[in-house]
Amino acid sequence: MSRINLRILFCPSLGLLFVSQFLGQQANPFQGSVPSGAASSTSLPLTLDDAIQRGLKFNLGLLQSDAASQTARAERILALSVLLPQVTGTLAETEEQLNLKTLGLNIPPNPFVKIPTIAGPFSYTAAQANVSAKILDWSAHRTFKSAKASEEAARLSVQDARDLVAQAVAGAYLQVIADGSRVESISAQVATDQALFKKASDQHDAGVAAGIDVLRAEVQLKTEQQQLLAQRNLLEKDKLALGRVIGFAPGQAFSIADTTPFAPLSGITQDEAIQLALAQRPDYQSAKKQVQAAQETLGAARAEWYPTADLTGFYGDTGPTLASSHGVFTLTGALNFNIYNGGRIRGDIEKARAALKQRSDDLADLGAQVEVQVRSAFLDLQSAADQVAVARDNLNLSNQTLDQARDRFTAGVTDTIEVVQAQGTVAAANDNLIGALYAHNLAKVSLARALGLADQQIKRFIEVK
Image (cartoon, rainbow, N blue to C red; front, side, top):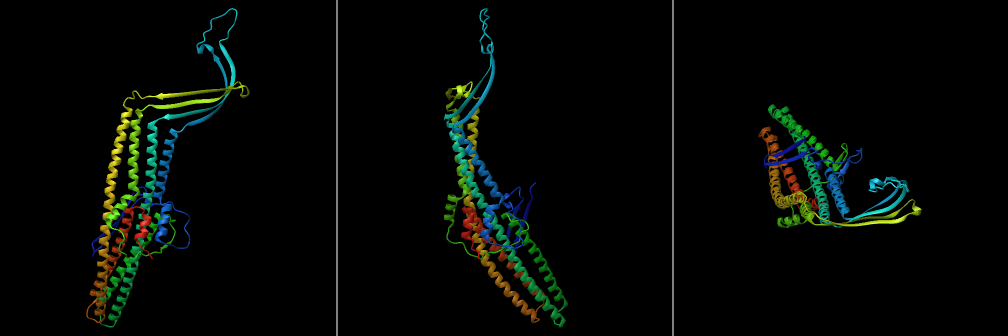
């Protein structure tokens, strides 16, 4: 049974729920890879483009798709071989003895001449070339055209697998960036809590603050330190997941070399994106080729009723020895008809017609799915952009509130409750902003996948520095 782990990140003030699903390798090969080389002792800087290129080279899902494409190519070669002449050579040495009676030669007894009924033993040598060819076989011809369309569909499926790899790698890379931002944010909060704890302790020693203020500050410090430990652990685990997708050795240390500043999407409208996706999405084009292959298969099944013409024969030298041999040949042309086959051809036609209907329905469904994915990505982009704007304003206001709470505590006007609450608000605002930025960039990755040629579109949509 495959293993499914769900990670849920909840941002309280924005009400955002991000669910990233990581399936076991058996269920989703795009989360696995074929590791390359041994882990080095030095940490490697990894850019987003480097990560995508490594994924396109070592990701298990793409390698499996390549293997399926090779199988389709082999099927096309086999289908073509049926239409081409088949030539073989024979070199034989025969030692033989015959009972003439078995050949129908019943020689009556003759008192004057004794005619033997056994011929041989005798020997002869034969060297010949044999050939067979289909002169006319419309069913085999349509089968070849179907295999050719299937090969093209498999080739397009490889390109679609490249898009899935680029999406998986970019998503994992952005997740590590978000984890690193949260580590930095919580580290800053820990530093702030340490300063508050020290201030509360100094004021308590000076007799101007209650002991409960020191306890509150220490509890807040320990809470943030615990969250920092958990977030650092999550960061390292997500780095392991990223390394797994792109083929790093499990022990290879690396650092994220790029950051992703916020940049609104521009240069493409939703209607333009839908038309572009339908024109270049590899999986949609592959589905079209699969429909074409199913049409050819149906034509091949119907063509089983058509007559076929075959040519067979051989030419060679035969004799007691090659030195005393003589040329021999046979040439046979045949026209073959299907008269009665017990319903086999009718069954083949019905089966092919059902497969064509299924492929056509799949194509129609995929076309609608592509449009929905593009529209959904645009909705996510707009929503995330709005959330980024609100989160930035909220963070600015939360920082102002925290500054005022610190000043009031320093002045002895209030206790640490107000400061701790303000720190919690800042922490939530920071987390919301990080989540909104991650969601915005992830929506760009989803749009890149929806358009096709994801590795190129990701470079276009996501600005890194």
